[in-house]
Figure 1 (cartoon, rainbow, N blue to C red):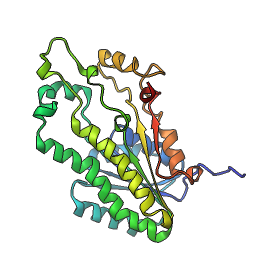
Figure 2 (figure 1 turned 135 degrees about the vertical axis):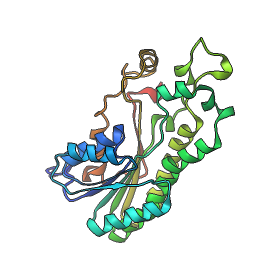
Figure 3 (figure 1 turned 90 degrees about the vertical axis):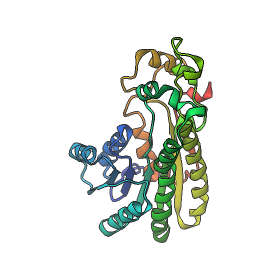
Figure 4 (figure 1 turned 135 degrees about the horizontal axis):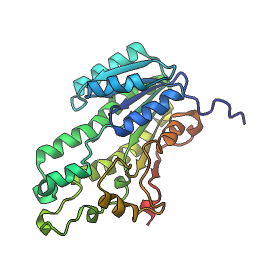
Amino acid sequence: MNTEGLFSLKGKTIIITGAAGLLGRSYALALSAAGANLVLVDIDETGLKSLSKSLHGKGKLMNITCDISLEKNIIEAKNKIISEFQGPFVLINNAAVDSKVSSIKKEGKLNRLENFPLDNWKNEMNIGLTAAMLFCKHIGPVMAEEGRGLILNVSSDLGVISPDQRLYYSEKIEETEQNVKPVSYSVIKHALIGLTKYVATYWAKDGVRCNAIAPGGVFNNQPEEFVTRVEKLIPLGRMAGIDEYSGLIVFLCSDASSYINGETIVIDGGRSIW
């Protein structure tokens, strides 16, 4: 078998939602280096501009600043993309609202299930799940018509296991006010795996595949106490580095993964096997 160019992304157009976020940036840098054309989608215009300046790949580039919680914006984005680029297309549904450790501590009681605001639930569902479905709805048919394409959903290790709320526990806080990871994040990440399986069979006959990744936590200068607790749950004994998911992303977007369909690949240092 000739493996030359197997991992090259030259000529492929890859759409990344939530591109200006921590992992979105990392994915974009790796995919650009592999030769892909990139469509970077995010509500953060400043972040997109900063990311664009960091890219040194030879592929074409388009920034789309929009609120993906609105279907009309996704339709407009699709029209811009297909007017500028040709396939094969890859869609990475990466956008999410993730409560960081600092915000979990700040929100505290409000994040608890019995107090969780319905508006928070709706907003996070719209961005993390509904938008992913809508991008599939509008970009998937473009792929199917061409007879090839890939959709990659970014789930989480919390899409295959439950949040360990002990990570946020403080002896100084009453039990009814203990900090927790919100219910919305866990439900969305589980649901993205369900969406992956559905889409993987829906357009399979048209040459469109769909997979998911379930990454663990990335070290990003979280509080030392939190990091120590997390590391005890991971067989490798550490959180992921910011670039440690990029190789998997490039692999799954390349022809090297051409027979992988409907799968969720967990990349969490082994946390979910303990």
